Length: 403
Image (cartoon, rainbow, N blue to C red; front, side, top):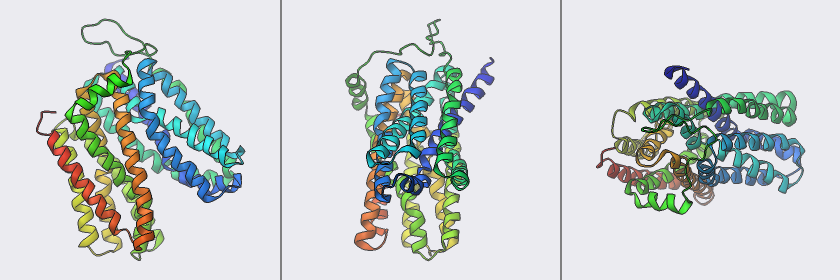
């Protein structure tokens, strides 16, 4: 297979794999009421299972990154596809709180953690070379938003046509169908410089321990600064995903119009992710991150305190948030790729996503508390402005070193 055709195939395979995984995870809320009705459990109980899924998604990524390093990317990605499919298939058959926690929180959460950005990126870069990493990163990042956009109407249609049994059956099918794609995508590793051997997809990459990997990473100033920035990114993103629609409605915007404005955000994240991948190979990645985080702080402050709360300004606000929403992933992963051995990248990016999800949990929780205590969202958005400003300053310090 020619180099360009190999690049195109691996990119398409990665986009399909990550798009399906992120799409199902991102739209899991659509299954909340059907699962509650089918299982006889409360809305709150299923919500706890979904919250556990989000935490498991972050917490398992470093573990699966280390497992991929010790075994292979193919093994972990296949394990993730099977785990995801099992969790989806179990949904119509669980009738207890414990069963829901296992199906959604454990099987689906672990499946999402295995089919994660870092492992897919690492698997593809092994085949097409590190010089194409930023292109692949931008495409993978965009596929997350594309998957969520595509799976929302698909899931709604399946639920309307056949309820939870049909939806769970059809949704688990792509996971199993993509297993052959995983095997072809990881068929071999690109030969290392100065080494004529092809390690093969099943070969262990190295035998470093967690302690050795993170001792090196935490000693690196840039990685510490990335942790500061990416954890605030999770706080910002889930604040949007969990509370922005309700905030638009609280301003008197009709629900249908608010939903349309919110959908624009999803489309803008795709454009922002692609633009970020392109820019990440043309400018300092630290400065790009600093701009993204700083832009968020300024935009939120303008909308919160100065702009009128109309549908037009809501759309403008949503577009601005979307353009920087997923734009931090490509430069962040690019900095990790540039500073650490490729075999360790999935583990280290996985830890960054764990920090991201901790921030996500805090914003979802604090947003609800803020509404309960103050009757509005101003306080939590002020916290977001402060954390985005902090992330911008931390990222700008990265730019003082050539990246």
